Image (cartoon, rainbow, N blue to C red; front, side, top):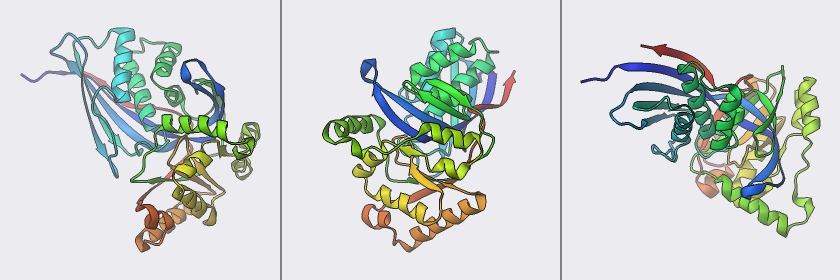
Length: 332
């Protein structure tokens, strides 16, 4: 007998880039304190949630995904942040008892890319479930659950531009009216582990003098963004992880330099990488840059292709002023 569908929702799940990123100290539990300008962009996944009556007393889950480009490592079990978010919601509300939750993900955000795709998916599940059950969790409770799942998850609930501190969960929204335009490049065959980069960061701090650190002026970047001086703002963007990750994977520096040579206002690593984003003046420029990278790849004469065998997935995106968004919901 086919079970009747009870609740259904579709949720849009955006990526994020770090316009600035710095590590500022240590926190209890082995964590690091950071300061970062988080920025949501229009590179997005879509999650379809379906809740029906289950056969077990406990929450059951089915997870599947369709990919644009290489799937990468996308677990379809309890280790996925989607499953962790659903279980955390149920633990707080008890509303998924004897339910089967089916989650289908249309993936466009590359995996292991420093773009917070997994965190965004988790935020989308929390928001989607809360909306389907008529908001049993207040905003503060939702943010507390998000923080317990991952440092980037709280930001992606609201999105836009926010200054993040602590582990990334202490957030100050910033009202930016002007839109930035991005070209985001991800080597298809490369993923980078965030914990490994934090570990390498600790080693760099011990072994090198202070001169290795990029100069990061969050306040200057913020003031330029607020005043609408986008090109000036990009001169203040920087990421403390960049020299570390470039040391691990030197061809990433060649990708950055190619973006700058093509006229991008700025180019840098996002998060722990390996994605590199360039900021350009407009969408026409973005399409030109993407075309040039495709031409490089077709000719096979790029450094990263010759040295590493990397193919580059190239995405065009713009600023968005929101986080995860409910597209539709249905109660049967």
